[in-house]
Length: 332
Length: 268
View (cartoon, chains in turn green, purple):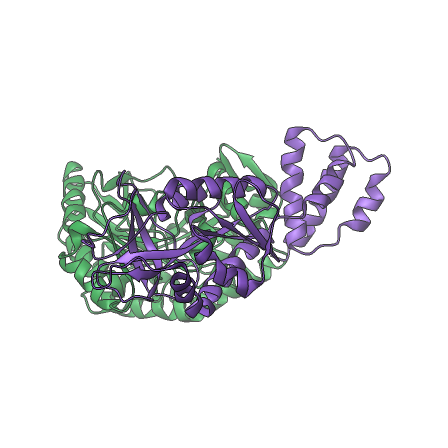
């Protein structure tokens, strides 16, 4: 539960904003003019805020659909992302969101219709060619779905655009709203997993691995396309055994042949994000590992990364068909 | 380190008594000190408050982290006299500038907005509180600390129904009546600051490390990262430093410490 709610004054009567306020009617509410006056202020400490973040209810103006960064996505020609939320309810130490914004508060943009119009326009610009939209770049796509009703609006929108694909990327188990809707073959829910050691040490607040596997299985059983993202793979003393165990857990419950896509990538952050995050968490072993800077990215040295990816890849390909596998390579 | 900021002696007195703070020799501002806390009496007005905060920050510049609490009285339209609030929005009535103290600890008081006025005003036209210091306090302290470590607690001393200026004794009595909750709020804030400060190794150990060899600026940056890590992981660096100290060069020291960090990090 957030510590308090900030709401842009102009949204007081917006139906989605009202629903959020009603949901947390015992929390203090502070009216603001624009979300940036709280979210983007100087002199904020992400680490301190993360222990008790507030919810900011805001209107997103300007461009709402942006081209996805290079290397993000599953190899399609047209990749875009949009963010109906900024920041994540979880606290994963490897995540770039820790160094992305000044603030750890969670921003919810309630003007879905504006996002929808821009998604529609973007899809139409590419004629009949497939266009991917990623919603899990600045937040977890599903973790706050019961609160934001994100899928209730955006899944039917994508279903009605013949060339649009949507990836919902999540570490949550919040699939109930999706299960209430008929499956859409162009809406892929991609579940991210790290092994049990990394989960215990680095993924604070993230539901347990078996519960997420169960959520994934329920979606598959209901006919929804599901993806798997083993990203990031984090080096530790027992990473090999832990990764093999994770695969066994996942594929004991999931039929690999039914997966839409599987990807794998090692831990990496841009130089700027790494610098900010490692300053915030000087006590974090992940950042004390022998990491190198290569092409603006901080990650494992080539040899270590090669060894890790080759091992994980060979184990993974024992379970999944090669044509559904997409490696994430950043050393080039 | 927690710094209390009060405009008047009568606002400061309940805190001074509660923590048995000791008065310091006379200087630009009246300052009282206790264990890991200090209190400054700023005088009335936002400029005085900002100046007192800057003065205290300069005085305490060797502290890794400073937390700040502005305690004082405020006028209100409808709120009852003696009610206490933790400010969640401070508006400077002259400039329109707004500040948002960040709620990073448990709140022992309900939240409220507060308008800081440049001169006394008894119109009681707004719903929130109004005072004469909070915006100066916020503007100044945010140069030295992050917004989670800057809080204001205000007690209502007058309202539309009772507009008399309270006496000094009445002000002290109002604050004294809520001193336990005020202390709890302050201690929550101080704990947050302490946790943040504990991430930084002691200055003496850092200076001792630097004295072992000549480190370039780049090397000092690397050294600081690994030193902070080893400090935070509670790793005993003494044996390594003892072995390295005799004639070790800067690179060897950094490499030696980083190797320890790397080994430790393998277990995550």
